[in-house]
Length: 95
Image 1 (tube, rainbow, N blue to C red):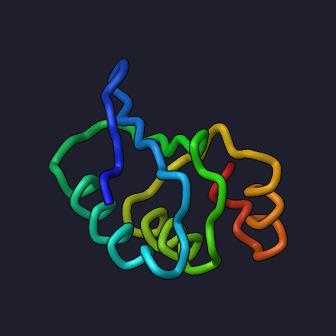
Image 2: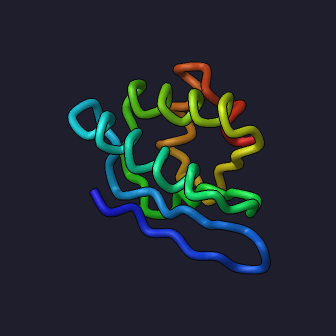
Image 3: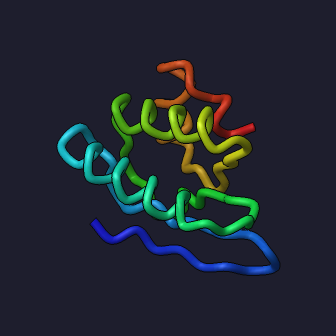
């Protein structure tokens, strides 16, 4: 899995892939930990513009990362993805 990221105005923007499902969640988690442990002090923003589907397993990974690394904000969440987040109780990732 190749998660894209870039730094703009002291913010690290992490672009999620199109799908984060149960089959890739372990690899997704490992790569996100590598990115977030890279020693930077940037404010982190998770851009979900490309994200078409996320499983509850993927949402748990994001919640775990937020608890460990602090203020991770998601932006550009598509309505169908937000609906899944709301149904599963993960809307705190948005705010």
